[in-house]
Length: 101
Image 1 (cartoon, rainbow, N blue to C red):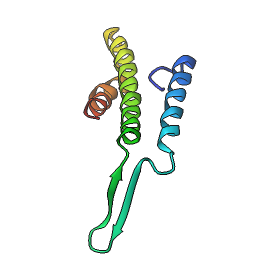
Image 2: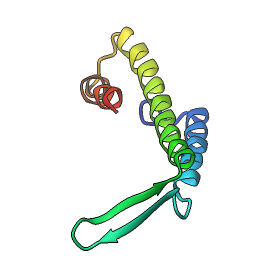
Image 3: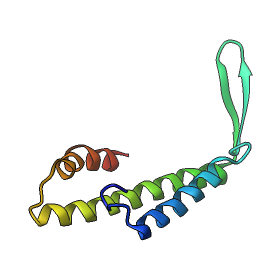
């Protein structure tokens, strides 16, 4: 949000996306049943794939939207030759992190 200088549209949009991600992630069981074994620890025995996939896809969608917003804004700032410390830091560290994720 710092890159967009707290633009209300971006803040509200990201807040809605993060609230949806949080709502999906707080499901009581998350679709995974596990058992505890003294020798091996806790391990899953049944996974409800649709619940697990919805959590994964929501997380990836939120990260992708953040990546697109960051790329768009930093590219426009970089193109206008306004190279302050934040823009250099995002190009060097931030975009690589989001691309790897």
